[in-house]
Length: 172
Image (tube, rainbow, N blue to C red):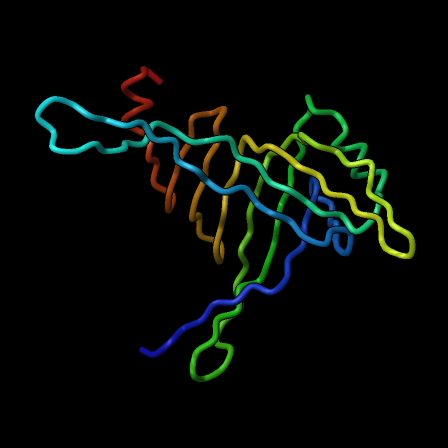
């Protein structure tokens, strides 16, 4: 089959459905961190860690300037904002670029840190926002890869509900 290399070299952010093209320098999407608890018991020759849920989802956006519409949307920590990060995944093989497909990440976020700016003479001001996330869904070429909704107890991998039995056991 040979070597296949996927590359992502750019992206765009959408806020509440509106393009923010050219306004952000970078975005750090949340990392999924599994919380684990240790299990040890008499008769076990070792200690193991077992999954116990997920840690808080947090991310950052570094803006290239001040934009009042963004600050107004993110300014209320009690109202969530819909973010979308869209990128194009280029696939390369020995025959050159063989495919270009979308990678889309949908987020529901509330701002946890809204910058007033860092200023230096003869340099662009620095504005970096931080957010927490209650919902994230990632699609690759239109296929669901991952979905986590903390407030609705939804966790899917490849479209398969990983909490179906758990939800049933809780009576949901």
